[in-house]
Amino acid sequence: ILLSLGKLGAKDVLLSYICHPNVKPITKEIYLPHVAYMEDGEIKDTLFDGYLFLPYVAFLYDKYKKRPLKKENWQHYIDTQYLDGYNMDALEAAVAEVSEKLGLEDYKVSIYLSILYPVTEVNEFGIVDGRNLDFSKLEDRKAALKWLIDEQYKRFNEKEYKHLELKGYYWFTEEINCADIQLLELLQLLVLL
Image (cartoon, rainbow, N blue to C red; front, side, top):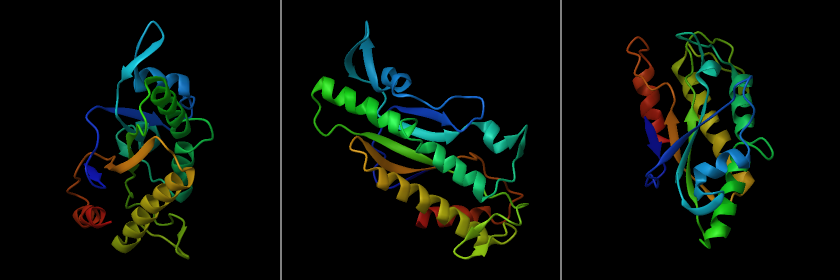
Protein backbone atom coordinates (compact mmCIF):
# COMPACT_ATOMS: atom_id res chain seq x y z
CA ILE A 1 0.00 0.00 0.00
CA LEU A 2 1.50 3.32 -1.08
CA LEU A 3 0.19 6.47 0.55
CA SER A 4 0.91 9.47 -1.63
CA LEU A 5 1.44 13.10 -0.64
CA GLY A 6 -0.02 14.16 -3.97
CA LYS A 7 0.82 12.89 -7.41
CA LEU A 8 3.04 9.82 -7.22
CA GLY A 9 5.57 11.50 -9.47
CA ALA A 10 7.48 8.40 -10.55
CA LYS A 11 7.24 5.80 -13.29
CA ASP A 12 10.19 3.58 -12.42
CA VAL A 13 10.79 3.00 -8.71
CA LEU A 14 13.90 1.31 -7.30
CA LEU A 15 13.53 -0.61 -4.05
CA SER A 16 16.34 0.73 -1.90
CA TYR A 17 16.87 -1.73 0.98
CA ILE A 18 18.71 -0.49 4.05
CA CYS A 19 19.17 -1.39 7.71
CA HIS A 20 20.76 -4.84 7.71
CA PRO A 21 23.59 -5.58 10.14
CA ASN A 22 25.57 -7.51 7.50
CA VAL A 23 25.08 -5.13 4.56
CA LYS A 24 27.07 -1.92 4.18
CA PRO A 25 25.20 1.38 3.68
CA ILE A 26 24.60 2.47 0.09
CA THR A 27 27.18 4.81 -1.46
CA LYS A 28 26.89 7.32 -4.28
CA GLU A 29 28.84 4.94 -6.51
CA ILE A 30 26.27 2.21 -5.95
CA TYR A 31 23.38 4.55 -6.73
CA LEU A 32 24.90 6.20 -9.80
CA PRO A 33 24.15 3.40 -12.34
CA HIS A 34 20.56 3.32 -11.03
CA VAL A 35 20.07 7.07 -11.26
CA ALA A 36 21.67 7.28 -14.71
CA TYR A 37 21.65 5.23 -17.86
CA MET A 38 25.35 4.78 -18.57
CA GLU A 39 27.45 3.59 -21.49
CA ASP A 40 31.15 2.85 -21.00
CA GLY A 41 31.10 4.69 -17.69
CA GLU A 42 29.53 7.81 -19.21
CA ILE A 43 26.21 9.25 -18.06
CA LYS A 44 23.88 9.29 -21.06
CA ASP A 45 20.38 9.70 -19.61
CA THR A 46 18.31 9.34 -16.44
CA LEU A 47 17.09 5.95 -15.28
CA PHE A 48 15.01 5.31 -12.14
CA ASP A 49 12.96 8.34 -11.14
CA GLY A 50 11.64 7.05 -7.80
CA TYR A 51 13.27 5.40 -4.78
CA LEU A 52 11.46 3.47 -2.06
CA PHE A 53 13.49 3.23 1.14
CA LEU A 54 12.61 0.13 3.10
CA PRO A 55 14.31 -2.08 5.65
CA TYR A 56 15.54 -5.55 4.83
CA VAL A 57 12.97 -8.18 5.77
CA ALA A 58 15.46 -9.57 8.32
CA PHE A 59 15.12 -6.30 10.25
CA LEU A 60 11.35 -6.72 10.56
CA TYR A 61 10.82 -10.47 10.66
CA ASP A 62 12.20 -13.50 12.44
CA LYS A 63 11.46 -16.14 9.79
CA TYR A 64 7.71 -15.60 9.23
CA LYS A 65 6.94 -13.83 12.48
CA LYS A 66 7.01 -10.05 12.83
CA ARG A 67 9.65 -8.86 15.28
CA PRO A 68 8.25 -6.91 18.25
CA LEU A 69 10.26 -3.78 17.46
CA LYS A 70 10.42 -0.95 19.94
CA LYS A 71 10.99 2.77 19.50
CA GLU A 72 14.77 2.38 19.63
CA ASN A 73 14.54 -0.04 16.66
CA TRP A 74 12.28 2.32 14.71
CA GLN A 75 14.68 5.18 15.53
CA HIS A 76 17.62 3.08 14.29
CA TYR A 77 15.79 2.56 11.00
CA ILE A 78 15.16 6.30 10.63
CA ASP A 79 18.76 7.14 11.55
CA THR A 80 20.00 4.63 8.96
CA GLN A 81 18.03 6.40 6.23
CA TYR A 82 19.99 9.58 6.96
CA LEU A 83 23.53 8.33 7.65
CA ASP A 84 25.95 11.10 6.71
CA GLY A 85 27.25 10.42 3.22
CA TYR A 86 25.28 7.20 2.72
CA ASN A 87 21.81 5.98 1.77
CA MET A 88 19.64 9.11 1.29
CA ASP A 89 22.68 11.43 1.24
CA ALA A 90 24.36 9.17 -1.33
CA LEU A 91 21.28 9.22 -3.52
CA GLU A 92 21.19 13.02 -3.34
CA ALA A 93 24.83 13.14 -4.45
CA ALA A 94 24.23 10.73 -7.34
CA VAL A 95 21.18 12.64 -8.59
CA ALA A 96 23.10 15.93 -8.30
CA GLU A 97 25.90 14.51 -10.44
CA VAL A 98 23.49 13.23 -13.09
CA SER A 99 21.58 16.50 -13.09
CA GLU A 100 24.78 18.49 -13.59
CA LYS A 101 26.22 16.16 -16.25
CA LEU A 102 23.00 16.20 -18.30
CA GLY A 103 22.29 19.90 -17.76
CA LEU A 104 18.92 19.17 -16.15
CA GLU A 105 18.11 22.18 -14.02
CA ASP A 106 15.85 21.43 -11.05
CA TYR A 107 15.93 17.66 -11.73
CA LYS A 108 14.42 15.72 -8.82
CA VAL A 109 13.57 12.12 -8.09
CA SER A 110 10.65 10.93 -5.97
CA ILE A 111 11.22 9.44 -2.52
CA TYR A 112 8.92 7.06 -0.63
CA LEU A 113 9.54 6.09 2.99
CA SER A 114 8.37 2.98 4.80
CA ILE A 115 5.82 2.75 7.57
CA LEU A 116 6.64 0.00 10.06
CA TYR A 117 4.06 -2.30 11.60
CA PRO A 118 3.22 -1.75 15.29
CA VAL A 119 3.15 -5.35 16.56
CA THR A 120 0.41 -5.79 19.18
CA GLU A 121 2.66 -7.82 21.51
CA VAL A 122 4.78 -4.74 22.24
CA ASN A 123 3.52 -3.41 25.56
CA GLU A 124 6.47 -1.06 26.22
CA PHE A 125 7.30 0.56 22.87
CA GLY A 126 9.03 3.61 24.31
CA ILE A 127 8.20 7.19 25.21
CA VAL A 128 6.21 9.26 22.71
CA ASP A 129 4.55 12.51 23.79
CA GLY A 130 5.51 11.84 27.42
CA ARG A 131 4.12 8.33 27.77
CA ASN A 132 5.30 4.79 27.20
CA LEU A 133 3.17 3.33 24.41
CA ASP A 134 1.43 -0.03 24.68
CA PHE A 135 0.56 -1.57 21.30
CA SER A 136 -2.35 -3.56 22.72
CA LYS A 137 -4.10 -0.15 22.68
CA LEU A 138 -5.25 1.28 19.37
CA GLU A 139 -4.56 4.89 20.38
CA ASP A 140 -0.96 4.03 21.28
CA ARG A 141 -0.41 2.29 17.96
CA LYS A 142 -1.79 5.36 16.19
CA ALA A 143 0.51 7.61 18.23
CA ALA A 144 3.53 5.50 17.27
CA LEU A 145 2.67 5.60 13.56
CA LYS A 146 2.13 9.35 13.70
CA TRP A 147 5.50 9.74 15.47
CA LEU A 148 7.23 7.60 12.83
CA ILE A 149 5.78 9.55 9.92
CA ASP A 150 6.41 12.93 11.56
CA GLU A 151 9.99 11.99 12.49
CA GLN A 152 10.80 10.81 8.96
CA TYR A 153 9.23 13.93 7.47
CA LYS A 154 11.16 16.20 9.88
CA ARG A 155 14.49 14.48 9.22
CA PHE A 156 13.95 14.59 5.46
CA ASN A 157 13.21 18.33 5.57
CA GLU A 158 16.19 19.05 7.85
CA LYS A 159 18.52 17.67 5.17
CA GLU A 160 17.26 20.25 2.63
CA TYR A 161 17.88 17.96 -0.33
CA LYS A 162 17.80 19.78 -3.64
CA HIS A 163 17.24 16.72 -5.85
CA LEU A 164 15.00 14.51 -3.71
CA GLU A 165 11.28 15.09 -3.26
CA LEU A 166 9.30 13.20 -0.61
CA LYS A 167 6.20 11.89 -2.37
CA GLY A 168 4.68 9.39 0.03
CA TYR A 169 4.84 6.49 2.44
CA TYR A 170 4.72 2.74 1.96
CA TRP A 171 2.93 0.27 4.24
CA PHE A 172 5.81 -2.17 4.40
CA THR A 173 3.85 -5.10 5.83
CA GLU A 174 2.21 -5.50 2.41
CA GLU A 175 -0.69 -7.42 3.90
CA ILE A 176 -4.00 -7.04 5.61
CA ASN A 177 -3.90 -9.26 8.68
CA CYS A 178 -7.54 -9.99 9.48
CA ALA A 179 -6.55 -11.28 12.93
CA ASP A 180 -5.49 -7.73 13.82
CA ILE A 181 -8.90 -6.21 14.57
CA GLN A 182 -7.40 -2.71 14.84
CA LEU A 183 -5.65 -2.81 11.48
CA LEU A 184 -8.36 -1.19 9.36
CA GLU A 185 -8.56 1.75 11.76
CA LEU A 186 -4.77 2.10 11.61
CA LEU A 187 -4.86 2.17 7.83
CA GLN A 188 -7.65 4.76 7.88
CA LEU A 189 -5.48 6.91 10.15
CA LEU A 190 -2.62 6.70 7.67
CA VAL A 191 -4.84 7.97 4.88
CA LEU A 192 -5.80 10.96 7.05
CA LEU A 193 -2.25 11.92 8.09
